[in-house]
Image 1: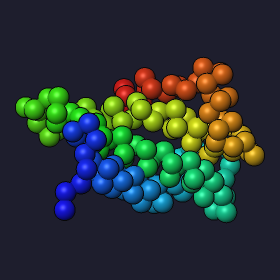
Image 2: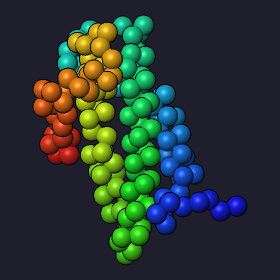
Image 3: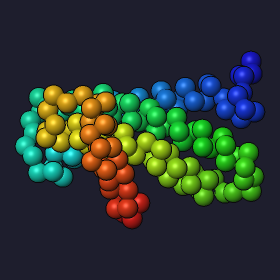
Image 4: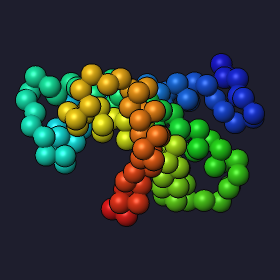
Length: 142
């Protein structure tokens, strides 16, 4: 059976597959991300805390993967003769730029410095402080 495509190229099944893939990766990645963030901001952590911020990590990854597959579908319509290497790299960078504010929120949630502050409030505070895009330069420089 064929899937309905919106705008001639957006396949909801592919988008949902990206979303599911992001959730799967988030389950595995969440604890490691929390430990990484705590080490970066030099705050202590314990094994009881490794799931802190996992909800934000799941949310971020689901939209990261979904964005990636949407950009892949769009790029195939816009640029036909592009190698898979360049197409994948271009779409991955665009996907990260799309969800970057969620990564800022995730890092704040996992840092241990914003205990009891919800995801929406962290997003509002980051926007108010001008930090939604904090780290983009070093992130793409690596």
